[in-house]
Length: 567
Image (cartoon, rainbow, N blue to C red; front, side, top):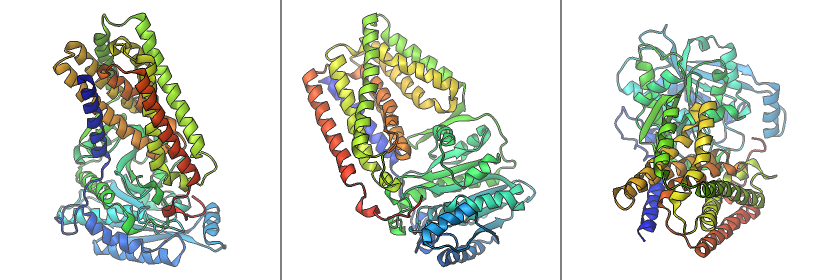
């Protein structure tokens, strides 16, 4: 009974930590202190800009542009506009949206607030002011534009004169293929004054705002970021992965030119991405607050710096549940792995046999194979990566994530019942964890800034296993319980972020969080009756497949049934 209690405490603790980490902060009201970022104040701009769809070349786009010019000038900024014809590819997309051919031009807005020394490299805040044809775009990217306006207002309310110029670039034609950004960084002389960029973007209508991309050789910039931003949400894993994806934002254009920068976005409530229901009332104001507060902290630090940080080797960086931010040199990953391996070696000393090691390795392999098979079958049943509309897949993410979670737990229950049963977990722990240690070592060697999601759970799991070996019936068990709760909570948070990003087409990304969570729980694992494990696994599989069929036969959610014809 005690073993089940500790297992339950670890599970509940992990869920609570994950919920805390993925919950947006409360939006600050419109009467918040003038120097604070206030989503309540920013919403006034959101409601004005996102009254209706405002794609490039339309009268509504011109109305939004006129409004933004007045707002920027009211903040004491000098505003200029640049106009250029859109590319043939962009024109083809725009003509497809409106159903008839017509000429259009992309119009960028560039605003400048002079600093004490205008010869110093400037700080550029960037977002795009256009929307897709069928969506008012309250999130994409009105939220980014409004956050910039409120950031500038809050900075000015502090009364400090910036060391360097503050520039605001609101691009046009981003939804047509980064037209405005391409125009600015190819032809505008002001591009040569830019020292660092803070770009704001969204994909969806809510969720935590994360700093997901940086420029190359980001070490010194990340140190400034970590010291300036209170409770930041950021990870070098996303920065590494984003480079491998075909996705792009306005910052992509500058990043390819070597301009340092920070790219923020939130991607929750994915069904609202490019949706006609992406209205101001549907926007999660907590997400706007989350994005704006981080942008304001970072902007203040960049403007106050006597010299902008130069390029230094990339850092490993990540937040823990939005409470603690860690950044360190890539070689530290090897130390973490050594400590983790040493802790597991101590835990298995004298109790690991060759047969037990083999059974543990079998548990690891069986878990990955069974989970992968279940996820593949359910994905096939739901047509989540088949011939369905891109936006319908996004709308289905919450259901697909629940389906994947149920099937992962089912796989763990099945493997535990078949291969573990009533055997002591300590006998199989070494075999189960060794493949993950090897995988973490390979990741450290090949992609050191992206290896920490393997290393940190292994470290926590090793500490828990060593604590159980030290004192299994007392404080050691509680240490193992706490370590498992923290590690599993991080895995749930990571799994949620990964699924939001790539889950509909790549549900297999859930296998790694599942495997590491299982390893962390092994030291606490009680005796398991095979029949009970089979019944539990069977029930979870039925529920998971039921969700898959629900997605298959209800692919278009009523709230997001109408989209633009091209994404």
